[in-house]
Length: 323
Image (cartoon, rainbow, N blue to C red):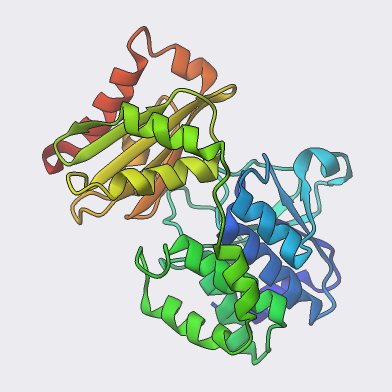
């Protein structure tokens, strides 16, 4: 997809770049990279999100690069129906992005499409990270990213591909090669080190204590609220068990239940089983290797007295004979 078309559409407009809710490093890097790219063409933009910057890794990233993000609550009153919205690392109706005031004129994403939307610009590729797509724009336009932008983009790619071992494609490797000559090695090293907080150990302990195996699937519930990013890390942790090829980890929070799904079994598409298992009670979707989901508090309470069993049974049924 030629990014020149998007640039033409946005000329003369102030654009809002919206990440998925509770943005992770890849979403933030993608939004930041696009914002800096637009600056080369005199296009002003604001990065917005819903939820919180709720993990040490994302907080460090925002502070290191001086990235300005605004919560939707803080600017909702300023949004107008004719404002341009660009979704990055998500798509409208994906279940993990709020439908804010404004016109969603574009989506740039590396997740599968489950609900078709008629965007004016749509770039969806199954690659390891959304930041890979943004990097491609710099390469295609012959623009050299500044050090902060390049380092942020590479950090986003490394985090979403689990250091280039999860869902990585040739396009991700090409992005790495392009960015490498522009990055700051020491900054990248600082970002990748010391990303666990002491309180995270409680979540690890709960995940270990509650893990249950059903065939090649490992289920674990953390009985207290966890940030999205930590739940994702815990699902990677459970997947590292020799006996587990599919991991489902979830946390009960004040607003509902957040789930993270991982699969290294070729026959089990994490995004598909998330969508099927949560159909009618919540929303879910993602890649073949990694996905997420959410069940509202009301829907969760309506599952009855054995809610955890219901969730487990739904995922087992979605996996069918592949468990």
